[in-house]
Amino acid sequence: MADFTLSPLFNDPDWKRLPEPEVVGGFKFAQASRRNEWIVKLKFQQEGNTFYGTGFYLNIPEVTSNVIVTSGHNLINENGALSENIEILKPKGEPAEEISEVFIPESYKQDPTTRNIKNDYGVITTKRNKGADEAKGFGFSLKLGHEELRGRPLEVSGYRIESHPGRPATSSGHCVRSWQGQIEYEVITEKGLSGSPVYLPLKGHEVAIGIQ
Image (cartoon, rainbow, N blue to C red; front, side):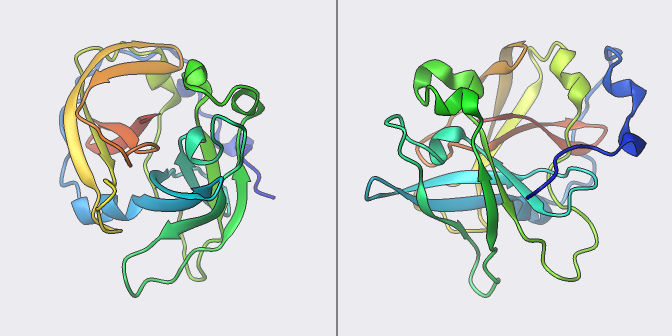
């Protein structure tokens, strides 16, 4: 079972401190190919029907498994039926990842509908390939949960139904408003992008702030 508890060595006092105003700027020498590796296409069955969605790796210190975040409704439908035969689709030639565990918060299991959108998330953990010496995925900053994000440029990257694994599509826009646990943004999305990362540049790097 994966342990998502951070070591005290990673306890940074800045996480609890309210953020100081800063200029976010843009991405600095961002490698789109690497970012595309962090975003995965999911295939799964719900009550006998096949669906597709998106998930993304989150870089969490000291976790020995790969952590993929996605939307909760990719893992359970509104009738409470759990998704089956979940696959992490890979470009041709890449080895498949073995899923270790699927986590859905109880707060979403109790009401897996559009009324409960703020709890609509889940986690898939997979075994890290041998030889991997570092976690991969989007960074995150807890202090951004306290920051005013309105007007900030945002990007959403994920998979349309016809998109090939390894080639996510990206839409950009701006944050309309933000409050604790949720953000509203003007970005063009479509079916299949559920579970995509919503991210912005912070100090030149891609930082995930939400789940589509």
